[in-house]
Image (cartoon, rainbow, N blue to C red; front, side, top):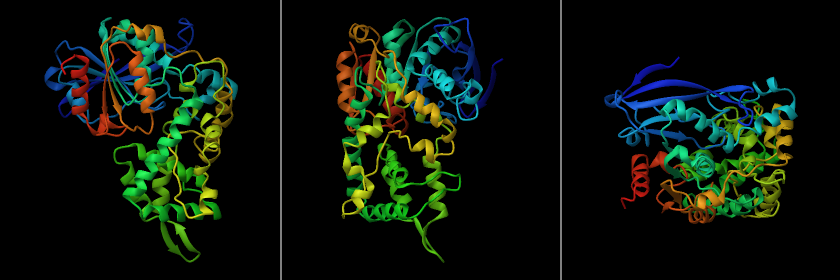
Length: 433
């Protein structure tokens, strides 16, 4: 039963859908998906086209907007919007350390999670589209991983799409996980250099924190083990519009004086644990490398293996000299499943997924080459999370895809730029500029 309620300027309706867990077995087990329908208050009674929003991640539920925040206000001028929690996230049959044991042991949990990639998400969308739109195609807006899902959608079910808009989410069609991370580490290094150029005082601050962590065992209030590698992973912030500034403010007051000598302050530890914990989005850690798998080879902790080829990221070696400590970025490592109490119970499940064989292709280059759906994509000039060169190669491979390449925004441009980003993409898709 749908429930409707109001916020300033909008009418919201909670919607729930039943879909097969395994779309290859449509009469088997079913799971529940949650979506929040949003329509402008003055258009609530109108027959409007639909826009489906696919969130970035993997592992994050859709944005919980209040009123007409960010890009949503622009979309509501002409669309009825469905903010979908992708399977396993938000309120859509969540998959986490509390629920996954219902599936059995680690091997059974890994088998279950293998059905939570973009191909299953697209089939979910097609299953609910008929119920939501009456069968009419809809516009899809995909942010980051949501954009990856949109390209999968174009590959396997383009008949369900009227328009596709992608922000920071054009994936490589054929890069292996190793290829992805070999391209990623140099981008991360550039972002770190730019941060230190902006805040040169942070060079010494970061080194001091790293030295402290190498000499002391620090356990955060939630039980997270703050190792130097975990501290370096805070560099994931540097791919966001305000991330460099937030990192600077975090570093500037890290220490307090205590009777035992300098210690990391409670305030610093409290903020860091919120930034590092995967309690709210464990699928990000569990499936992050699996979203790149498209062949019989295992992902086998690609980010960890590839990092060995970039010794400049080794904190212990850095601290023997006087160079700057390098932060890392969007990568998942085995030690995270030891350090993070939200992930520890899932360590063996993660190992099983890393050894998984036979990942099916997520994209169909031949079908994309004859695409007829209008597609527009914002490509950020030096996106830390998605390689720009990979994105532009894919843009050339999708017939009719139009790009807006910009250095005005970081990866979260659709949030930071809001209506202006959506306006630009709609104009491109409609060939108005």
